Length: 223
Image (cartoon, rainbow, N blue to C red; front, side):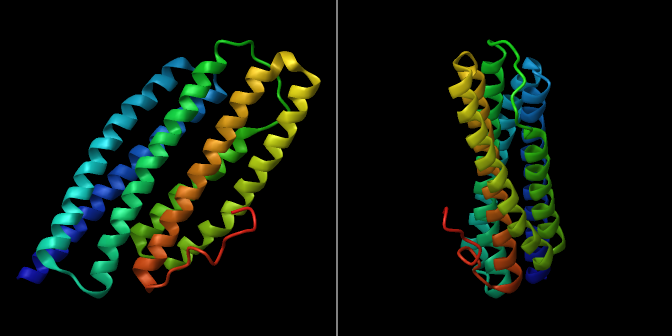
């Protein structure tokens, strides 16, 4: 019976983490809408999501640490709890980065809209997909699915680098567009960081399922 109760608590903890992941995904989606649609209301909604994410983070951490202390789990259950604690932190940071995007989007509303030679919609969609796949891998306990997230990160890094380069050229050619370009560079950088957090989540899923630490196997020279 004690073992069955412990497994039920682990399932409840996973459900809490998945609910938090949904909040983080919603925060990202709202922040992207705020930027792409120049929607101030969406930017405000991101702060509401952040408040909920912070409360969820505290709840998940508290339960995970209580289970570590009371149950003293071994092997795969111990790895699961350690992974949950780390994933919890990455989801909270996704919320923080989404707030940063929303704030840059709100700042852009103070300036005239200009046609910049970049498309952050693709980068945002890819970043959101990375989060969804990483969380699905957690739900399914699928290390192979989690590994696919690691390769997606290279594409986000490339788009971020290209965006930065293009917008620096825009600022040189059109100084009057400097504020719009700078805010867009910051948004791109925040998306790149969110992709990094999605990668961290995927790596923690692999650690949980296979007991393998892959944090440095996919590092690039840019890291």
